[in-house]
Image (cartoon, rainbow, N blue to C red; front, side, top):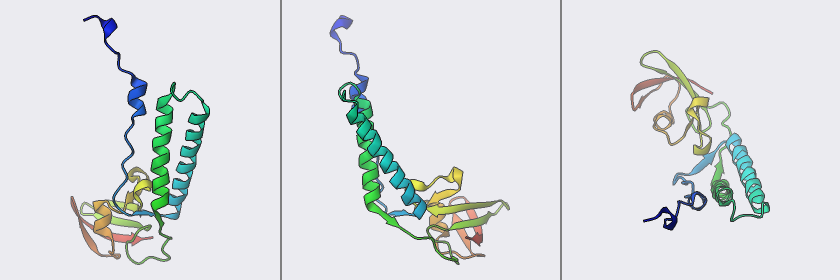
Length: 159
């Protein structure tokens, strides 16, 4: 069959059908910083949506409109379900929003702040409250031990 009679893949059409970003079934707990970040992301999504609409040629740039619409739905839903958890004053046990420092069996020390899912970034020192590490440490106090997926740790500081 001649190539003239086959339809080339329409990449814009494929991109326009972007799947929604998955929304976690867990409670959407956020720190004050996490809430501010959600507000910023929602404002950016609204601006991108408005820019895509203002471009006028929605049919010509369906990818931008699809991304903007998807992000707007996601951040609007996350902002609507956000549950602000204020900072704990002088925490004595590991809880949401606190920084916990622990020592591994090999003597290495690590420190993570336990935060909401959207603000978690282990490379920057934060972990989601639903992560196995955070779950194992919740409620522990300085000197307590916790079993994590790859060993045992001891809590050495809570801030």
